[in-house]
Image 1 (cartoon, rainbow, N blue to C red):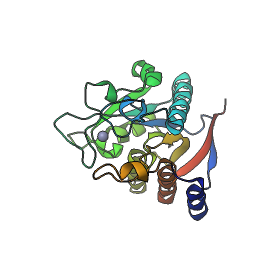
Image 2: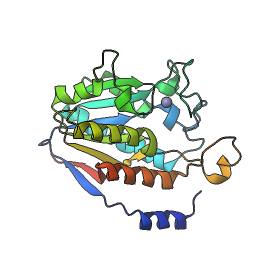
Image 3: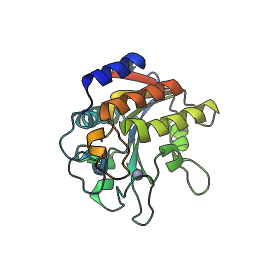
Length: 244
Ligand SMILES: [Zn+2]
């Protein structure tokens, strides 16, 4: 556990101003769920180093907020694009140990989101890499995420999921670069919902006993991930409310 003082120092040195987001329907907004799968979120998933070994408040809060947003989007039939981290057992993903193997529960949406599999406004996308933008590339060079934005006339994406500083951040950075190069029309805004994101916890006292493990204190890395997303041009929001 990182000391509250360390978090306070980080927040003082890297202050993160957050906005609020009102979803009124005036700006066509798509919800992007990043890897809210058992292998990263469900207590006791065996293979993954990211899944919590005990109930984790940040991850549980992220799942709850993602479910709330997914219900709101589905009620309004607004588009949702859900990444599922899914790996072939013979294809490793360095630097990570094996996780979310195809065909196992680890690569499935968490139980509270599995109903999304049957919703007509939801596009599921298995990805076998960290960055979902790259993971949306098809063999013919088209990009399923870019096509989803275009087909639905999406002007803003609201991004939630796990991990704030890894898959969420990499996807957000790629989406912003692609937007800046005018590769994702008509996308204008990339919004990251801080309470809808989470990361895993590998504090220094635990990591020091694991060969080759990189220290990853949860609260600090969550903050750094949000800060870097904002630095690249994303909007970071603390509250998301449905307008009507
Ligand atoms: Zn993976």
